[in-house]
Image (tube, rainbow, N blue to C red; front, side, top):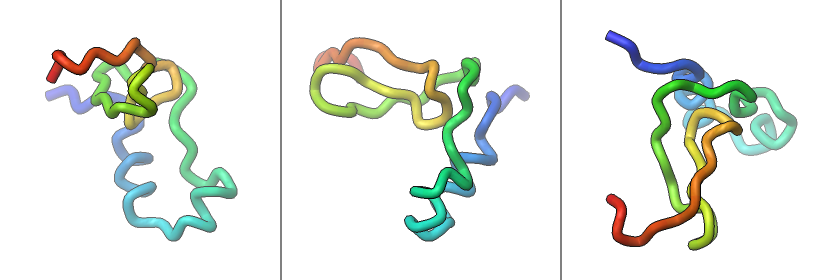
Length: 63
């Protein structure tokens, strides 16, 4: 079963205090994670929770 890359970083980001996350302790991965999970960033683009490579235009009809 493939859970995708960088899932452990996302798990860590949910549990670390913000001051450590702001220092880059658990940054998103730079390469494509291979299995994006999207969030609406600013009603213009959506970003992947796990990697920096995952970016797509926002579509309110897509869910």
